[in-house]
Length: 311
Ligand code: G3H
Ligand code: 13P
Ligand code: ZN
Picture 1 (tube, protein in one colour):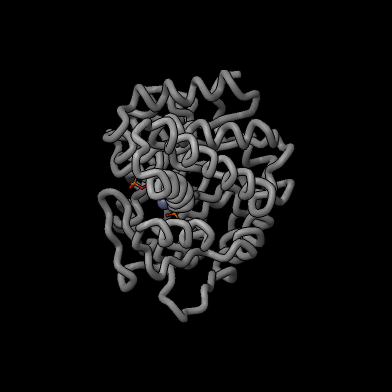
Picture 2 (cartoon, protein in one colour):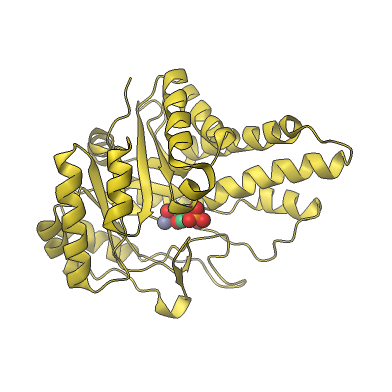
């Protein structure tokens, strides 16, 4: 099977009331952990690569790792650029084998966001690649963008039809109260998402796939393991899983998860090294990190995304 776009995945997910997990990949163990879980559960999956991942692992290595995962697992896999900042990085990924790109123009003016996104869509569609755009800004830290809580802004539902019409995007990321990273809410703060905005957006865009970024739940199990094995991770709080399940049943077809993978991998590595100070074979600790990633993704597919047996 070749890499696929997200087109058919999203059509089926929308109709079936579930979502596809979009997991960030940076190395072989993460690719293996995610795709082994998806393969065993017969779930479609999106593997996404940030600019930072490309800088760390190199574009070609990442593409080849994903192609290897495709050969080993009989499931639909899309390879997606996460948070493309400009036309050039999108073009480079489109030309370099990706089947989907995100152009993140959310920090530009509405007009400039439309112009930039439309340019990427024109090029991507001419090559058979699909495009995710974004309206509204999430709080948190990504590679090149650091959005403070005060500067974060919910998506305005009255802008979405014009944006989709004028750009031709295939899916739209919206801001409804999720944020990037492991510290999404302050201690004592009640996690809340603006489902009213999601409902309003989906009314205005019937049958159109919506994307949720910043959707890690920050498993307290892994936070505890990290803390008990020498790590410092106070007050890490994520999005409750029942809220993500609710989102997955609605127009949300893609749920982005990175921080949870980082925590799962780190918990495994810390545990091995803390308990075996003499260990120095990377395979010893990486295989435990990889097993944690696999268990985490299996849990998400079964209990959050609902994409088991949808391949
Ligand atoms: O949304 C951002 C993702 O978690 C990727 O993070 O840019 O540090 O690779 P990164
Ligand atoms: P988290 O930091 O919640 O995992 O979000 C990841 C993300 O949105 C990647 O684009
Ligand atoms: Zn994101």
